[in-house]
Length: 200
Image 1: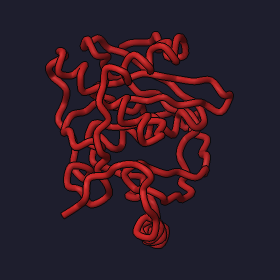
Image 2 (image 1 turned 90 degrees about the vertical axis):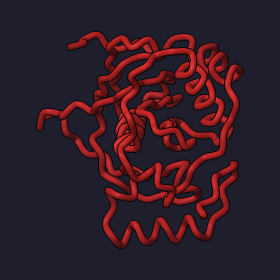
Image 3 (image 1 turned 30 degrees about the vertical axis):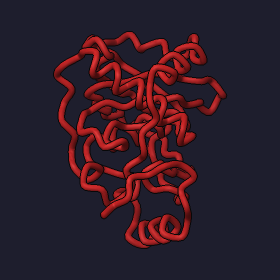
């Protein structure tokens, strides 16, 4: 069990730029695309192909002005997400996690925050959703080494949201039927400001 949390707050600008400049932005898959609605495959090979995918994910995330991106959001069936996200203290976090597992929080750590949530795969739509304001994700880095990432506030929401994606859940799945209907209506009436993959 890894108890040392990754340091993801140093050299953020340089690290994000290096990933992004090596990568190519890809269009974003949207609600209704089958790849978003099923659990992704575990990452078992930590090689150059995985590194290239992560570069493309950082490029895609920046092109769509997102703070987190899961592989299935660019149509790839693999358990990996990237993030470039501020926490509530204004501290920037940049990193990538393979095979993430969200740690179950003890009851005394579960303080719910019902801020607005959105998703690049549900463009132009937002809805309040209660999530714990602290999160710990355990997984592997791009070399397959075990890592742990923790976040508070908005960054905690990001870690939970991206991990959900890789298990086939969108934030809309956690909403009441009425709120989900409202979100899908917002999406239908809006126009994404980035390239998306049309659902046939």
